[in-house]
Image (cartoon, rainbow, N blue to C red; front, side, top):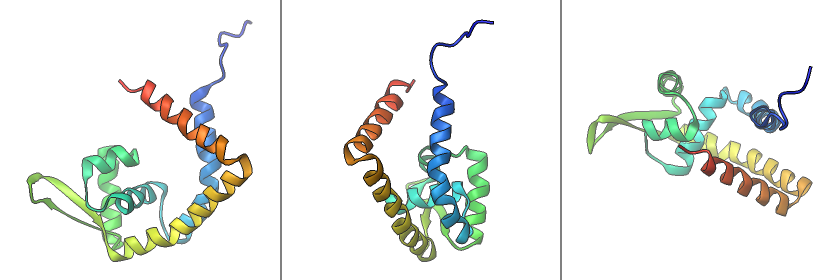
Length: 143
């Protein structure tokens, strides 16, 4: 049988890379009772403040129906607060509570330390190149 593919499986490699990176983060997230999607939501809120749910879904890569469940659990746990957007009552705006922001601050130290380790391990130039290549790939593949 001949090999029908000439290129390596890029989607699989990207998933493997994601999992390799996440193995450093997950233990810290679990200590604080956070799932990967909950952390992605907190990261978005920590970077942008009060955010409309559609933007959270896009930036955290969580489908709308799943995001609803994630936000419900986070609100129950006192990590976020939701309210109607004053400018558009059809939209919901989410922001991290003081408890949620404290968690972002605490976890950011561990995550930034891992980025420092990564930069030292592969070099600042290679890390910058990786970011640039990923940005180029994302831009290229946009519809």
